[in-house]
Image (tube, rainbow, N blue to C red; front, side):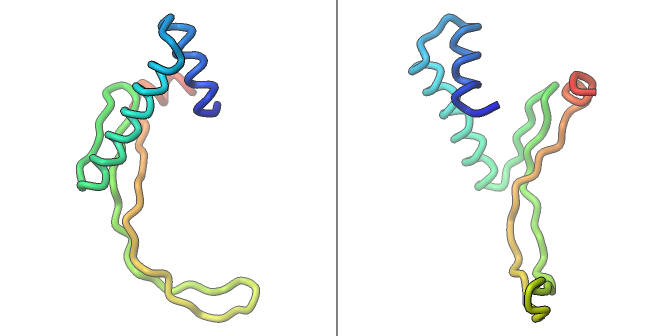
Length: 90
């Protein structure tokens, strides 16, 4: 499902205008991103938890040339599905 398809479905179910639904969905995504950037975890009960994980610097290898390289440390977002979501999917 794309973001546009999500907007269509939510607008149809809520009987709201697509522009209003777009504002709400964009606001939700923006606030989740801001919270993660600030190091917070975002817990959506019954859906899942968004967290930021710290990856250490590590050694890697260029597959084409075989040359050794260093992969820099990074902060990456992760998602852990809640039991409710796991049950709905499985």
